[in-house]
Amino acid sequence: MLASPVSAQTAEELASHYSREDMQQALKTREQYELYGLRFDSDKATLQPGAESLLDDLATTLKNFPEWGLRIVGHTDATGEPEANQALSVERANSIKTALVERGIDSARLQAGGAGERRPVANNQTAEGRALNRRVELVRFTDSVEAKKLLKAMSDYLAAQKAISFGYDANLQVVSNAGQKLGLASSGTVTLGRPDKVQTTRSGGFINVETVFDGKTLTLLGKDINKYTQVEIPGTVDHLVDELKDKYNLPLPAADLLMTNSYDELMMGVYDSKDLGSGVINGAECDSLAFRKDDVDFQIWVAQGQQPFPCRLVITSTQVSGGPEYSVQVRDWKSGDAVMLGDFNFKNTTNAVMVDVKDIKSKLGDMPENFVMGEGK
Image (tube, one colour):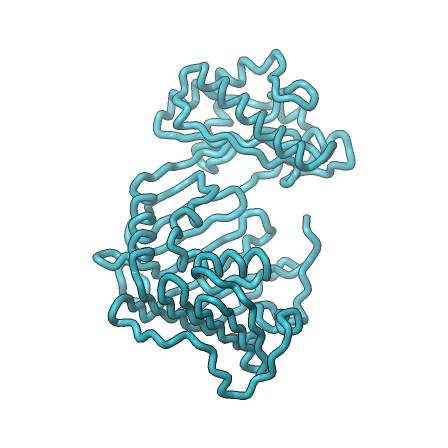
């Protein structure tokens, strides 16, 4: 999503080469522009004198293109504490938003956000690099009422179903140090009985696991190693999804789609939404919807008709080199009386050995043990 400045140019040079025409063309074609020249008081969100002409240009551009929405994202260098830089970047973006509203732009067309020091475009070890990192990112966005309406209809339909079952095929992409994309494919099944029962399977080249939850106890069975673990997590499936993700880093397949508030989960942080028209997944005609957040894009295909179930979900990282993706495609969708619900009790038919969750956790993820996560950047 980011377009890095040419490294040979300094922030001063980029600011001196600015023109309103270049900004408009970048927003029109790339939907993004890095703006230099807006200066703030040190460690404050107060715009310094000299910003008026740039702000006037921004307001004029938005008046010339009344269908545009504009997201204003502040960025800082790495001087100071990360938390303070994050807050400062948001405050500065809000200062620009306020200045544009004062120039007659409807606040509904403007969004303010901040990335702090998290997305540098240059080396923070030099004064020149820090100056390049102190910038304002402008992102043109679309706010499709129809896309959000269709996603909400899917969420409401899912929440109303007392029983759901489906098969799925998933693909997790990782990017090697050499920049090579590698896909890890798996398939499985999901059976859900609201509010507090779920059973899933997942098998692939590096994983073969079954998950059973009866409303009180979660059982995780590693079939290839014939070991299982049990954790007490009393509550609903919604609570289980949160616990597995936040506490154990073991998300359920298509977890966001299983929750009763899937719309809220999916839309958290979304600033751009598009209705891309129709598509066909597994022979079913679907509405194709696309959404953007600061760190990920996601596209979802929703079946048309009386059962607006999710047919395919693709999540793409925009802040990792190579743009790795996670996709899950749904098949054999059933709901209501068509679902054959079991008792959701774990039956140890293979005489699997019970172990502690920490002793089996590495065997339950999508990543093989010979894959090592790189350091954060």
